[in-house]
Amino acid sequence: MLLIVLVIYLLACALCGFMGRKTAFGFIGHFLLAIFITPVASFVIQAITRPGTHYKIQGRD
Image (cartoon, rainbow, N blue to C red; front, side, top):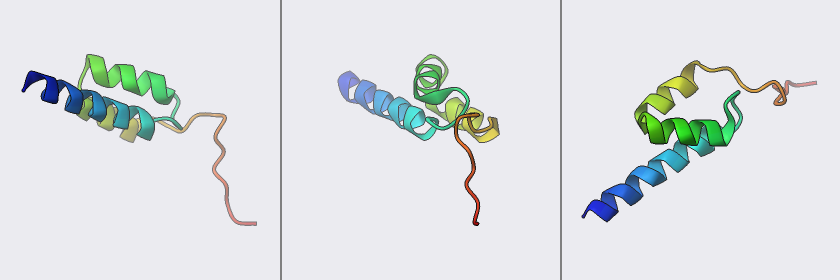
C-alpha cells in the first residue's frame, strides 16, 4: 500500500515538473519543489511564476 502511495506521489511530482517546463524554474525546479514541498504547492507556484525568458509568446502576424 505504501508503495502505491509513493508511486502516485512521484507521478504527481513528475506532472508538476512537466507542467512547469516552460516557466522560469523549468522541469527540474518544479519537480524538486514538488518533492520537497507538495505537488499542490508546486501547482500554486506555477500559477504565479512567469514563463521563462527563452520561451517567447507567439502572436498572430
